[in-house]
Image 1 (tube, one colour):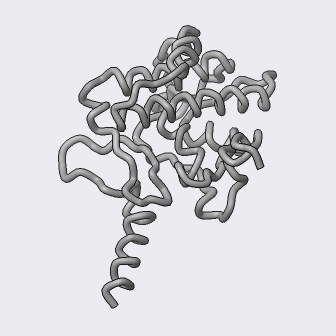
Image 2 (image 1 turned 45 degrees about the vertical axis):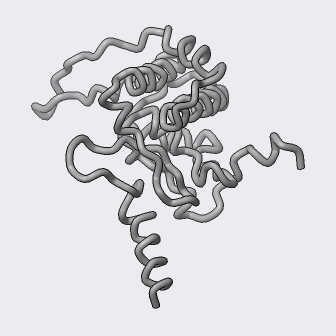
Length: 200
C-alpha cells in the first residue's frame, strides 16, 4: 500500500462514524467534517453523489440540475483538502501550502446576490433555496473559508476536538466556557465514560 492509498479516506466504517456533521459552526468547516477521524485513518463521509446531495441539503445549498454531480464531488473533495490544510494551519500556526491558490481561484466566481423573496405562506423563501451552478457553490464555500480565517475574532475561536480519534475542527461559540469536545453527545460522553471506567 503506497502513501497515497494510506492517506485516502476510508469508506464509511460504521453508521455513527459515517454520519455527516453539520455542527462545525461554518459552511467550510462542515465541508472539512465530511472526513472523520483525522489525522489517523480518515473515514470518508461524502463518497458518492447521493451523499453529496445529503450534504448539500444539510448545509442549505441546492446544486443546479444539469451539471455533472461526480465532477462537483471531485471539486468539493479538492476544496475540502485545501480547507483542512488552511484551517488546521491556522490552528497550528503553520503557513498553508498551495491550498491558498486553489481557494482564491474558486472564490473568484460570483455567487448569486442574496435576494429577499416573499413565500406564498406569508413567510420568506430561504436564501439557500436558489439552485447554484457548481462554480457558484464552490465559490460560496471558498469565500466562507476566506471570511473565517481572515477574521481575527472568528479565527481565534477555531478549535480541534480533544478526542484523539476525532480531532474535528469546529468554530467555538463566542462567549461562555471554551468547548473541549466537538459535541458532548459524541466525544464528550465517550471521554466521560472512559474516565469512569479508568477510575473504576
